[in-house]
Image 1 (cartoon, rainbow, N blue to C red):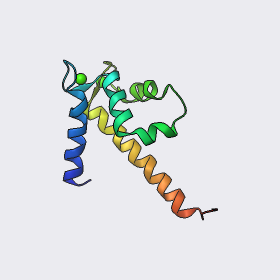
Image 2: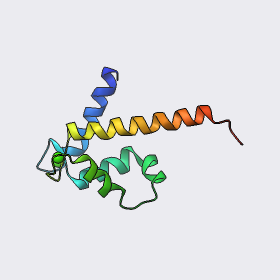
Image 3: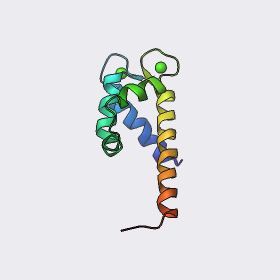
Image 4: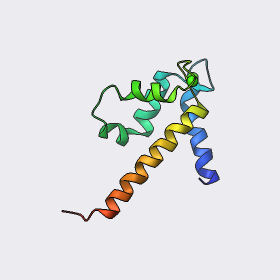
Length: 97
Ligand SMILES: [Ca+2]
Ligand SMILES: [Ca+2]
């Protein structure tokens, strides 16, 4: 990942994590706002309304109910891998349209 990409990742994280008293972590509310704003297209593809809860649970590795930047990065890595797999599938599968 390039340095500008890392910087924008940090900026996005803090744009939402700064909203309450705990400025270095995302609460579930902040995570929800981040995902709804920055990852709207991803959320639209997820029909399951429990997605945020599930993602929160998956991300919160130390179980303190907040997502730290370290924990947030694993979401980005996970999404990148998912996107790459979709890209691979799309480039391999001939278009039927
Ligand atoms: Ca916060
Ligand atoms: Ca945590």
